[in-house]
Length: 115
Length: 113
Image (cartoon, rainbow over all chains, first blue to last red; front, side, top):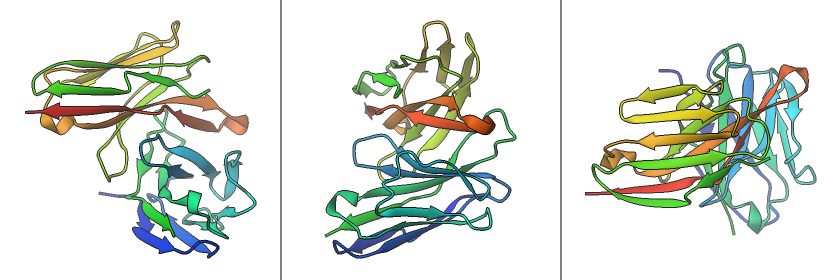
């Protein structure tokens, strides 16, 4: 069964260091999402791609966060410099926008701890 | 724009029923329901696309009242495996025919033996 791949699963980094997360969506899914989820809260959309284009990054802290999906397939989310408040689960999801249901399939996430 | 879920938390005994509500101050294009178990990614349950639509899978069903801008998730004869956090998401249209899902804060459900 096709699934969204994310790496790493866990990451511990020191404050002010750079960190990057990788996501490979389900093949053929043009829409890719990066979410941040703080413990006890719902996922917060950071950035949404349609193929290689950003369609929504209104909640992305652009002074320190960046995201790219150069060839419209896999994607990288970067944080530089990391801050203590960035500790959270970072989830990647993908969907097929040609389907009415637009069901999103999630990867297992990257648990980031900033110390 | 964030949908409001109620209750925030529910504790059930196995076999009991529960209802989780999701309401929005803005018109809902569609409503998505997901369940997330502790330490895992959210898993899609169902989507309701139009007012009055009802769906079900096993003993979990949902309804969508477009006029009232709300949706309800019904869990009947709950099983231990139903434990988790349930999220509703409201779909909003963006420019260029793109769509954005905005999530509620979630309802924590615990089913005890």
